[in-house]
Length: 452
Image (tube, rainbow, N blue to C red):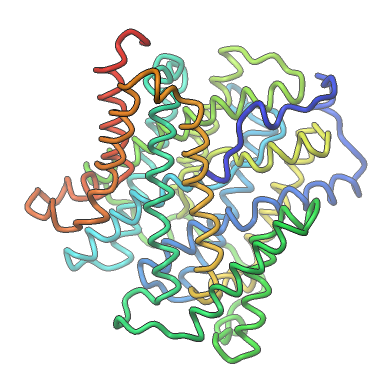
């Protein structure tokens, strides 16, 4: 979901050395290579708290808390996956970040609570509870995921990822036109959004290496500086924030557990862990380590435990970032301690509230241009996966795609269609990803019996 790439695309051509995964490069090389991993994933790592924070109407300081908590979770969970503890952690070079698959259900939870007159803090407490439940659920299903994975063939995962991307594109457009405002569009803000979009496309076209990998980060950074120079944004909150600080656990209050919200996040957890299976196989092939059931279970347990950590630290479900897996194949550096160093850098960034507030102060119209690229790439990932599905020879796959895509679009085109349902079910039915997942899994089970 985070700019996913196929396992085949990231497998290094050179014969991998299984021992390289445990090598510890020189400190200077560790820092440089670890920083490169952070640069590759940074824009995606902070995108989810920015999306959720803007949707909830949080202040810059509150969004800063979410960003700091998110970065802290990224670092902590990456250490859990790369260094590991007994029975938990793949102990391979993997960077962990918040999954984009969680945005849809979390926004549905937030919107249903706001519609019910609840505060933003209440929504965050419900989200926290749902994330904790999803993490516990992930730990429970880790040993048996091989049996669950068969219910998520490419026609299912591709459809769901496509729905996620299409659903999120509306958020990017909302950033450009200004969500929550009158129907008028600020021409200057729209122009800045498309300036950022054009800049990102230029970097993707002409940039190379690390510059190209940091296209989103460069576009947002330049757009923000230009907007600040034109007086289009306010960074006053940055000066009021501390240089060093720590976001304590459950800073927005104790978690609230609601059935619909928890179920929707459990669906996200299943999808995340099924995707992790593919990513783990890709990494194991790159580093030359044979994947077995015990190793896979350890990696999936890290997904589950990492999500519990995310819930406790005001963050979200975590998954492996595939763009970093691609970076490993490109650089040929297979040491897990490089990613562990990147994790330490993320922890350091998390301890700077001033930096977090600066990121949170990025105007939404600047993010809008980047959002069109990021969210569109998610949809493109779904299309790429579906490109490998037999849609012409197996008409059932066409039916699965058509019906599930339509179900996933229902909450987008008619927000009030489920308004009469009980409140506990609102987050469940207002999430396109949940509706699409239920539809795709059920139809695949009913129609593709011969392939089960």
